[in-house]
Amino acid sequence: MGWPYVGETLQLYSQHPNLFFATRKKRYGDVFKTSILGCPCVVLASPDAARFVLVTGSHLFKPTYPRTKEMLIGKSALFFHQGHYHSRLKTLVRASLSPHRRLRHLTPRIQSLALSSLHSLAASAASAAVVSTFHELKKYSFDVAVLAVFGEVVVDPRCKRELSRDYGIVEKGYNSFPTRIPGTAYHAAVSARKRLGEIVREIITRERNNKEKKGLLLGQLLDFKDGEGGTLTDEEIADNLIGVVFAARDTTASVLTWVLKFLADDRKLLEAVKVGGRYI
Image (cartoon, rainbow, N blue to C red):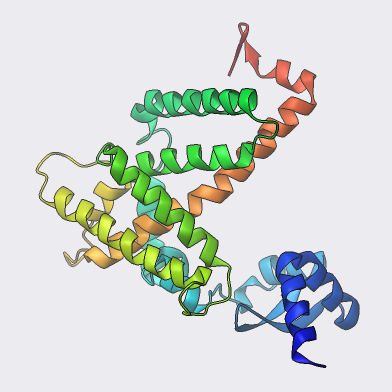
């Protein structure tokens, strides 16, 4: 097999990942070994196998990520850990982002962001033949995530634009082949992550010296003390702030996109969410 053929095959698989998995499954069955993004792994291609790992035999496994992904988010982010550190950070995140306890006072701001996003969608639809709902909702999800994680401290439009730009670059490189060659998506993502860290650490330094009562996740992480009086380092705080915002972008936008699709496809469902002539 010549190198040109290998290169063409890799390019084909990178553009059509479903073809890659379908070919491997047909050749090797529902469970097979391969290498993804330079990391050896075992792929489960059946519901029964996935159920065994996630439910029946979950105690036999622990979630791990390639080190290259840790570098792009931050090795101290809670979803790269298990045990006590993971538990206490997970508790902080849940408490700080509780809709009833913490986010209620942000509802007017979130509503304003939602209306702005809908107006943007309407304007785009009026001026273009095709509108990417998912892309627009990613911007909305990002704005809400930044508000929920940092509170009102990130109000400078220039700072938000820089955060959004660098998050987008990190996202593009997150699932790309991890080569540090200049010009590649991963190399650009590493540089963008460095800039993200600098921006977030500046925010942490400013807010650490802020004598006013802090809220939401940033404040919770800054004020955290364990049973022995230990606190989180700036690196641990930055990695977790960056990680939570990163995790919120695509997943939230995906759910919202499907919600809009199902509402648009089913008028009865759309009418069902009306209360007093207004949509809830």
